[in-house]
Image (tube, rainbow, N blue to C red; front, side, top):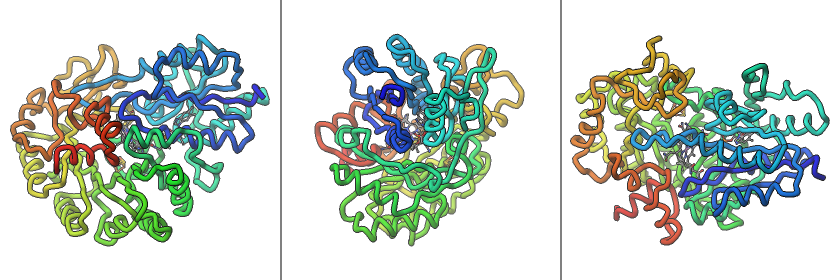
Amino acid sequence: MPDKSVLLINPNRIKPPVAPVALDYLASALHSGGFRAELLDLCFSRDVEEDIAHALGGNEYLLIGITFRNTDDVYYVSRDFMVPRLKEVVDAVRRHSDAPIVLGGTGYSIFPERIAGYCGVPFGIWGDGEVPILELAERLARGEDVRGVPGLIYREGDGYRKNPACFPDFSSMPPLGRDWVDNRRYHDEGGMGSFEAGRGCDSGCVFCPEPVIKGRRYRLKPPSDVAGEIESLLSRGVNHFHTCDSEFNLPYDHAREVCRELARRKLGDRIRWYTYLSPLPFDAELARLMVEAGCAGINFGVDSGCDEILEGLGRDFKREDLIRTASICRETGIPFMFDLLIGGPGETEDTLARTIGLMKELSPVRVGINAGVRLYPGLEMADIVINEESVEGRPDIYGAHPGEEDFFHPTFYVSPTLGEGMMDVVERLVGGDRRFFFARQEEVDDNFNYNDNSLLLKAIKEEGYRGAFWDILRKLAGD
Ligand code: B12
Ligand code: SF4
């Protein structure tokens, strides 16, 4: 049935590999609508052009969907821009097929018109993909006008038009299975599988694109569905996981309900999972429930240890909350790491010294240092730092391309009082403390960047390590 076949492609070749869970969900949605979904996963491909030619040769697809996860590695020292690699895949697909191409994904949703234009594709979908891709396929199959498809980016005149994104409740979504992606291989070569408890974030962090990508309204997956997905993966040998939520504890009650359901099904004894949490809301009860549900480690996005910096970043917690959070984790015995975002508005040598000093005192098992704030168009952070000034030649903005005002290429803000000296200051303050993930350009492979991290890859694939990358790196260091 060629007119009802949709090919879904994963072009993400970063190692350690991270499973494209989105394609499991999109394929489920298409399947539920009577379409034949096929997957071409280029992650492990030895010859991308040949695999594309092979998949497309002799097949006529109604539509080809390509997922695009990361625009870049959001890492100040490497600034690996990935859109050109997406375009290479789009171009290769075009050499072998005339089927319309639709792009989607987290990275795609940040710059939807820009990436569609760069790659020259007719369609994109920003935000959730399940409902829109099914509607797009249905309308194409019936030969109907597609312009009303929610979340659709489509050509009009010299540019693109963008429909409002689609952020539906799970109850109005097709059933979401996990049967298309080779999740077992991702687990064995990438150290973990993934599950999602909900979508959305309504926090006001001025730098973060997640409320744009996932919507501000919380959409909660019924706990029994979360457990069901985990059980289906577990039956295929996937027993280590990472959550795919923006922050698992937002909202707090849902996190508790999900943990209770996992514990009720005795999954806590059979799986180990890791998660991103906001430092608030967090208490001893949630920590205990998480441990009972199999949680083996938490990565808290704490950003800073100084109240004035936290306030400037739009965070709703304070230094005191970090102290309390660390003590709850220690009492519960749950390994935790703190992720910092340094160099933002108002950051000085003094605020850095206070933040790093607090980290040493609170002693999470690891502290991640993200230096410089990745700028994105339309987010409050851009308004704060740009203030109608041109980006060009600005000493506090790094990586901007000449004439480019939308931060398409990896562009970072660093507070002008620190400037290029930021890395020297951090290096001195960290003082070789191995609890900190901090690297200069030259050690880019051996650090906290999960973009082609050979140390991790070897540990997972050859030595059998499993779990969150930060926890594997900690274990490799003998801690
Ligand atoms: C969990 C997570 C991780 C975990 C993954 C663990 C695991 N086993 O899955 C870890 C810690 C390993 C990780 C690593 C990295 N991550 Co990460 N990660 C996330 C997070 C929180 C969830 C991703 C996810 O799986 N979502 C769930 C799925 C279902 O949603 P989805 O992919 O968006 O898909 C939906 C839609 O986008 C759409 N869609 C997707 N594809 C397609 C395709 C088509 C055709 C259509 C129509 C629609 C469509 O439909 C889907 C269903 O609705 C996101 C932020 C977020 N909230 O999404 C960041 C995020 C994607 N990560 C990010 C980054 C930068 C990275 C790293 C590069 C960091 C680094 N330097 O090491 C690496 C890259 C790893 C890799 N191999 O790709 C950034 C990307 C930003 C950007 N500028 O592009 C994000 C957005 C975080 C952020 N706030 O900056 N990450
Ligand atoms: S940093 Fe976390 S809490 Fe803040 S907006 Fe992003 S996902 Fe939400």
